[in-house]
Length: 222
Image (cartoon, rainbow, N blue to C red):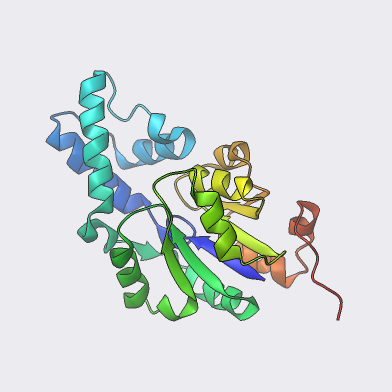
């Protein structure tokens, strides 16, 4: 097996850093900010189209979004991200089953690598890759990382990575522990949607019947 695991969501908890970015961006454009629970609910259910600046005119919203995205990619924001409680043990188990590759749609790969290093997780990944900002190139990049492994699994927390994996014809597990609710991951085309890495590990340990029903090839007979 081979696992292509998205940094954002499956590995790290995004909620605190994303809310901090919302607060900073809203303050910078002179607009009131949402409370954390409301902001995170809207982001998870509606994504970037969520009305996070109620009543704001298009130019104000565009300014906010640019500042929000810039804040998310700032090294100091990324370095504040922490793995989900279950992630280290789950990643170690996945790494015993096959090579793991960390992927991200963000541009600041060094800061993400620093988080993995600080948390003692860097050695669990054979490779770490920032995928292209051009969505048209991502399917080919994922195919290269999958290395023609018929049982490669893309573990995604974002709609964008799910869509890229589906275009690459790779089996895709969407996880709801990130910025996307279950409905959005299904709509993007995830083969199956689970809660977190620990649930994926439990499935594999018990024979992966749910994954096989969704299209994963069974393990070859010895």
